[in-house]
Amino acid sequence: MFYKVLAKINKAVLPSYTKKGLDPAKASKLQLAIIGWRYFVTTRALD
View 1 (cartoon, rainbow, N blue to C red):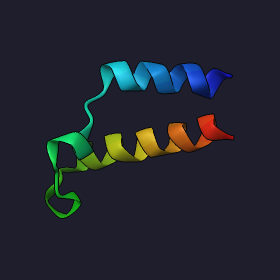
View 2 (spheres, rainbow, N blue to C red):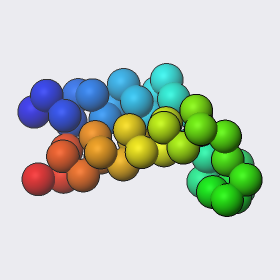
View 3 (cartoon, rainbow, N blue to C red):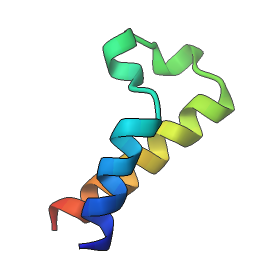
View 4 (cartoon, rainbow, N blue to C red):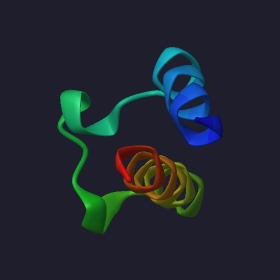
Protein backbone atom coordinates (compact mmCIF):
# COMPACT_ATOMS: atom_id res chain seq x y z
CA MET A 1 0.00 0.00 0.00
CA PHE A 2 2.91 2.34 0.71
CA TYR A 3 4.25 1.98 -2.82
CA LYS A 4 0.82 2.56 -4.37
CA VAL A 5 0.57 5.91 -2.59
CA LEU A 6 4.15 6.73 -3.52
CA ALA A 7 3.42 5.86 -7.18
CA LYS A 8 0.50 8.31 -7.22
CA ILE A 9 2.71 11.03 -5.75
CA ASN A 10 5.41 10.31 -8.34
CA LYS A 11 2.86 10.53 -11.14
CA ALA A 12 1.69 13.91 -9.93
CA VAL A 13 5.09 15.41 -9.16
CA LEU A 14 7.76 13.87 -11.37
CA PRO A 15 7.90 14.45 -15.13
CA SER A 16 7.04 11.67 -17.56
CA TYR A 17 9.90 11.41 -20.04
CA THR A 18 8.18 8.79 -22.20
CA LYS A 19 5.42 11.23 -23.06
CA LYS A 20 8.04 13.81 -23.97
CA GLY A 21 9.84 11.34 -26.24
CA LEU A 22 13.15 11.48 -24.40
CA ASP A 23 15.87 9.27 -25.86
CA PRO A 24 17.46 7.32 -22.96
CA ALA A 25 20.84 7.43 -24.70
CA LYS A 26 20.80 11.24 -24.55
CA ALA A 27 19.31 11.59 -21.06
CA SER A 28 21.26 13.26 -18.28
CA LYS A 29 22.17 11.42 -15.10
CA LEU A 30 19.37 13.16 -13.21
CA GLN A 31 16.81 12.14 -15.83
CA LEU A 32 18.07 8.55 -15.71
CA ALA A 33 17.80 8.58 -11.93
CA ILE A 34 14.19 9.79 -12.12
CA ILE A 35 13.36 7.10 -14.70
CA GLY A 36 14.94 4.46 -12.48
CA TRP A 37 13.12 5.67 -9.39
CA ARG A 38 9.77 5.67 -11.16
CA TYR A 39 10.42 2.16 -12.46
CA PHE A 40 11.38 0.92 -8.98
CA VAL A 41 8.27 2.35 -7.33
CA THR A 42 5.93 1.22 -10.13
CA THR A 43 7.16 -2.37 -10.04
CA ARG A 44 6.77 -2.48 -6.26
CA ALA A 45 3.26 -0.98 -6.46
CA LEU A 46 2.11 -3.66 -8.91
CA ASP A 47 3.01 -6.53 -6.57
